[in-house]
Image (cartoon, rainbow, N blue to C red; front, top):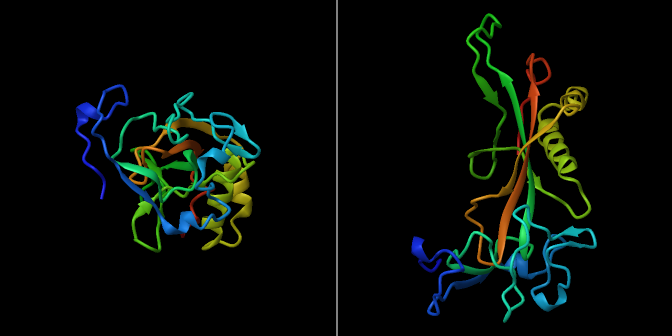
Length: 213
């Protein structure tokens, strides 16, 4: 249960000595899986820079550290929750999101009345629609993440889709790089994403793709 944070007190610049966020880090994170940091923040010496293969830099610029705990401070302000919650890294947790688009067509294969379509996945766990993205692995470029995730989810239903996907990824445009207003965000850990667009102008490369996750 998050502590309530009034809009006027979200900013760290607002003095609020009585602020008491709920401390929470999920058990699966505390078990120190490969994708998570150690709970002891004093072991992390390279915030705001490359820490070995782990990129601790934020797309938003340099973030502050709490002088008492050595924990990063969410650059967007207070969230009512401290710790890492469900996120593995202290500070920014980077994701890559492919935004694959094409023009819609009618039953006669015409696209005179153009409307842009976007490829989404239907999640097995919740049934919700989502971008077919994922977390950036240590040492990995975001484009590699985006391609890896897209291939995994496309190949689930289309084992022979490799050629189309390779062609699709020959031309990419980064359309967003920054903070994500994610329900998992805490005072000390937050989501950031780079969204990369691949546009299928003719629709031929994506016409047979079915994504599953």
